[in-house]
Image 1 (cartoon, rainbow, N blue to C red):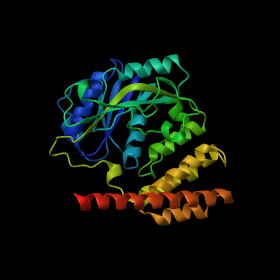
Image 2: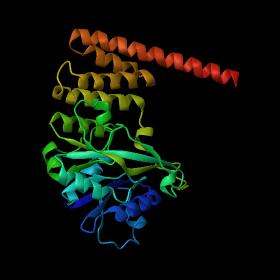
Image 3: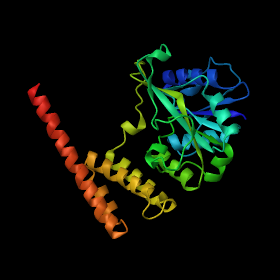
Image 4: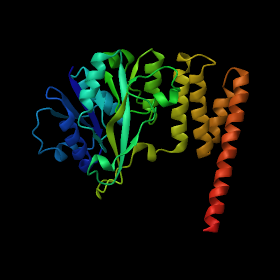
Amino acid sequence: MRVSIIIPTYNRPGLLQRAVASALVACPADGEVVVIDDRSDTAETALRDITDPRLRITTNTGDKGAAGARNHGIAQSTGEIVMFLDDDDVMVADYPARVIAAARESVADFGFSGFAVVEGVCRSSEDWKLSNSLSAESGIVGTRVPLLLRMPGFGVGFWIKRTVFDRIGQIRTDQIVDEDGDYFCRLYGQGCKAWFEAEPGNIIMRDYGLSREHAPQLTRSVRPSLEADCHIRTLQRNQHYFGLRSEERWALIRRCLRFAAFHGVDRTAQTLIRDLTPLDWRIRAWLFWQMKKRGKHIHQRRVARKKARS
């Protein structure tokens, strides 16, 4: 099975060089690394010294943004398995081989992995801070696992069979953030099976140490009100998959209300609760929202008292 590693990028040439180098080390001989420049015109210059024939560079001609760039990259790719890598992360060298084995030997349609976090420059695996969101061994993810633990995001070693992507459809580009949450809901809602790889697939880098790389992570630069609206759209578009009184639907509702309470986006919470059915869930949601708002105020007072004493 051939692998295509998709790397969207925007104006981060130094970080992109590191990501591409790791992807080429990891990529099988018959695979490809597809870099999609989201119209920043920096990828060609940053990667001009790489002569590896597996590397392809293309400019996003579709909707601008991470989702549009990934859609464009998949349309340009030829692999039977599509893997995602962010331009500020690093791929673990044996991860594609593990993905190919999982795709061949299981009923998995897509998958994700544990990950490692590195502060500053990564010198060896001893610097890794490992995270395993499911606290589970590698294998098919069961439906009893809470929904929010089954949708960790595209940056956590996400891969998908090309035939499955063609069936589910493109990533929604009107989701400025939470496009991955929306896509995971669509996957599970249409009965797709997920594979979880316990060992890290990607290394998430923090404190880059590259002084000229100023482009922020998107989720750190979006207004809370806009992000809250994206969460609500994920709920509204996908709740029909899970049933009116399902745990999955309640998990998506809680996620919206928790975010709104933490960021003080009252309008979003009020709109969600007003339109919620059935009636007893409207009451349940209002109580949950009030509890989270109170919890935030208690936390803020504790932090203020701690600062006053120091």
